[in-house]
Image (tube, rainbow, N blue to C red; front, side):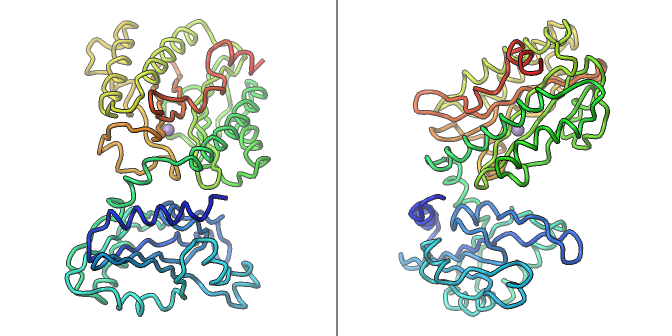
Length: 415
Ligand SMILES: [Mn+2]
């Protein structure tokens, strides 16, 4: 568990970033219904969790800043006999106060009533549009916002809440780094188990079972994202997740997977040979790409921009493809490598997801993935190598350094 002081500190930082005369509303995730009365396992909204540490549904965090004064209020679902019978007891307000460090906790039913006290003239509302927990996301967001605006015509400006939350979420504290490390450790154990057990003739979902077995064994009930287990040509589909093909002899198996620990994500890609040994051609391609990946990881340090890293990676991969005669011109690189070099990692797998559009300059204690790839449909293969990198004061720390990556290590693991 994270200490409660951490959540207090984070809320304080957000309030500091908010403009005077503003309110910020962050909603919890909604329970996801599978079919009548059967719910999926609940996963909290990342920003709500970041600021409260609370894994409750149907809740709202309200932060108020006016005349240099601030307030923190939490609205939650009260316990009732029906909920208690079917889903277990809801925490009491007193328990929630202790757990979150928020002294004002009320029933969610009283939210609008309370909000009325703080919504003054010409107020700014920070609202989270990125909360994509429901399928008809745009309409639903629009509906909720319309309701708020109908109640409060005095709200003059609505701003994206991520503006005041993401700059803080981007920099990880020691507790978050620990959680990501643990998520990576569990992912490592899963990948090693899958490498050990892979055989030609198996189905991709069997490899998934061997891999996710170690997730469940370590208390990870749901991976951070659907596991990608792609053999042969399937690896050329970037977000392939059918995982239902038979693994052919001499094919490569690409696993892009991540466990989630305390809501923090790992995201690792490894490629290994179904028949225990890489072919000569596979070895050559893999080693060329690995060399590029290591060089790019070596560029990670405070002060370098994501754009610079991304541009260098694209250039290196283009040069490799030219020298191997797959393309003639650097501009054709997209034919075999169409994604960017990585993304931020944290509470979300694609963390603070306005990145990389904002292309930030890297700072100490950011965590990002480095994942170059080449996808050769003609040769029935895709290779991507992905590690999770912590930016340190003077450089970087590869958090996934001990997951087999060289040909030698991988062949030893599948043997
Ligand atoms: Mn990734």
